[in-house]
Length: 435
Image (cartoon, rainbow, N blue to C red; front, side, top):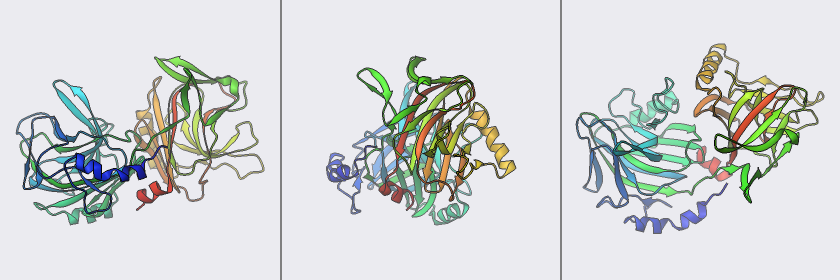
């Protein structure tokens, strides 16, 4: 992972001057707003208006217009701590976009991506929850990217001051997203969709709404990068940082205009075909995009090499072509080793049934799917096509080990893998995630 924490911090003052603002009194923070004009910002989307008044940006809804409007930074940011104050002058829905992007939509640029909600109307408030604007919001019966600890939500909502200035804090480090309202934690989640993007101050479409923002500042922590196990060198695709087990069942080929890794063998092959990482990984995010044409597969993690036909013992993020997608299985080692633990996420029958049904709804038959594993200490979360499937604590499980892609032995298996990536988390990143 290429991190630029130190180099970025050395250039923070210069970045602040380019935006027309001075560095904040807080260590390492620079202003994104100079308090005088909208230098460094641009309006995208709808027809709401923005102006600078008394050292604050004031956004006002234009009644009856159909599209949400966003005042966006011209610059993109990756990992950061963002802080600002906001005040709802006239009630109306709003939010702060981060790590967001734009796409053409008719005559406008439609902003989409992560949004930190500002909700002055509902009770209890959803302020500081995470919504995926114009992408995953309101899909599959889900609105929010995260569940909120009820105590956190109660304490944060109690701190909100209607009609006065409140402080919002957003932190992104790798796949980790955290928010605070007036110093009270609200959201704590991981998501792998975007590791960088723009900020945007939203004025929601509707009949009314006016909101002000001030003291907008950021501590830029560089940008996290996925490490790719599939790389192109000298016009040829090859593995980097990983090796093949049962080599003749793996080859790079073309599928749908993409270069993919093809994995296949017949039921006569009793060994598992595997792509195994050279290194062990302890705290990380890992993802793979695939099409399963037959057989059974998995994304191994925190696994150790053992003398068996299946080579790896440890956790599996399941790739099954059915409702078990993104469930967690634990594989056994040799007969003399401790036995495997089987399914680790099926203790509650009612919750398990709901989770399996949701995974089946998300899964794309005969098309590309993506699973992701995020592991931080004992906390393990799996994702399927952008949604969390299993979220569990496993204090007794392995805390480090190999990553691997599996072709299950003793079966006719046919798989295409488009990518296989890892994002290791450093101690400094973990400290921020867990602060």
